[in-house]
Figure 1 (cartoon, rainbow, N blue to C red):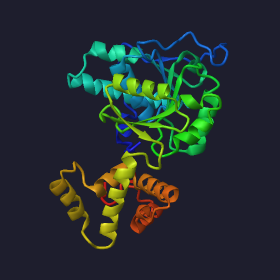
Figure 2 (spheres, rainbow, N blue to C red; figure 1 turned 90 degrees about the vertical axis):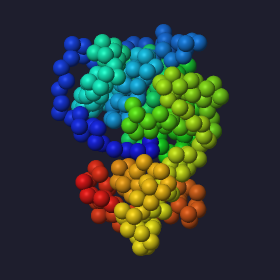
Figure 3 (cartoon, helix red, strand yellow; figure 1 turned 45 degrees about the vertical axis):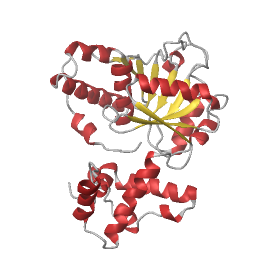
Length: 327
């Protein structure tokens, strides 16, 4: 994911939104055998979506799928506390949309009625599209795909929301289902950002790719297709731009405000590169630059020395209240 910010979740935490209709929860184990389900994919597209990971990205994907694509969504997280926090986050977003007149109260109730939650993978047997949206930890994602490939139906698309990890490596962990693995890389915040990167692994079938594109469009998003390469497209273009701005600062070419202002006022960027780095998270920026540098071997992707020093100091940007700017 391109932008990782926790401010919306922080706003949602601790708020209790009164509602006549509550999100549903399921935790009962099923006795269905692996790779079997009564749910099938028809010409109408996805019949039921599962989202694994109930953080801000996963919750946002679930919300848009329920509201725009109007499909039932199973939101899965192994931690009940995370699910509880996600439901508060969704309540807050829906309440804001009602207050702004974007949807009616009945619409909000309908959207919530389409979302169920679970702390186990058992419900995956009844889905035909799965989106994994857990933190960007490679071994965690590999473990999840190894497991869900034996649980989800044999016709289900298995998608990852990874922003940097090789889709080919993730697919290799889904033994017997490699051709059904693809990446749908949503941008943060999901309800706002229209763009989605669709990334094919070496094993991804054309049918899987097409189904992913069609479903993303059904969610009201604009898909951009790219091959499996370090950084994909968005981060491969954006992060070197941010990194170069940091180098301009560390070498004294320009001051913080001047660097940001010239890109906003001279190049029509909505946000300066240093402020954007703070919003994304300097630790995230550094991790992606290191990945690009390591996997391509190209010195143009060498992380700025100042970026490494700031991360070492614990200055990660907005989420730590200190980065290139103070918050």
